[in-house]
Length: 320
Image (cartoon, rainbow, N blue to C red; front, side, top):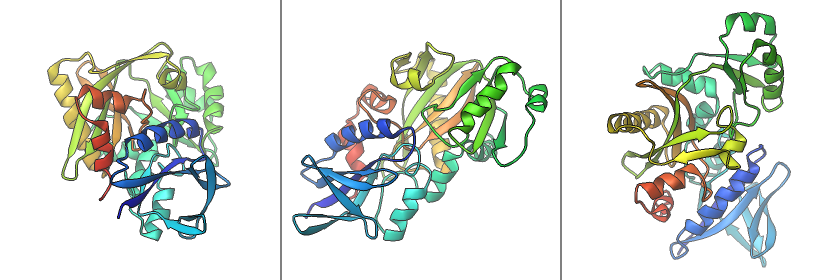
């Protein structure tokens, strides 16, 4: 009997729209001869299954739903929520309590990687280079005047927990710092202020084949904006070059480092690791444990560049 797969999308963050686009590709990729895929949308106030142009409420007590008087249970979850609650460990904990297996990282790894500061501290403890940074917390006092004396400009200010560059700013002058902090606090209760590394922006996808991590071809990101912000990522204000225009030695170095970071963090499933290359040094920026999977997203680009079948990689994340 075919297993019922919940492709869980949506979420309660600014990345809702991106998640829904990714879910469309995942639904198209899942092998209907092996599985019964259903789109499950999680919103702040409601969870529902979208099927045959109808919406069916989800029973949160056991993650089931009803159609024509029949109760349908899910055997597995393909998690494609970007941001909270799908990328920070919350939904993983829920499925663990119900003993429903899911794709991607577990509770601990999701929580660690979603918190940029803690993730960098862990990666740095393994001898991997990261930019210097400081964290502000909304409930603790801080002085913008003192920060401007301590920081070097330009710097980046961004929400510590979040993605798709919502609330992020490149700050060139000390006079712009206060506004950037306020903007970031609109998206999160913690703000990360990070050293600006001038170099080439690279990102490398990686997936688990059941036995080991495999890095994909590297993508070089050339943005028309001050940095790789939401507009650059999703509205065409950047050029994404796959494979990246770097030599073979740098390519191998980045791919092996990506597999190492993936392993150090305890990742599983599809992920993407971001770097800045300055001279010959790779600076770890962040780990994306539920990367975008819309047709125009970076991971599908890298899979195509590797000559791999995205449908096979997606279905290999599921258990027959």
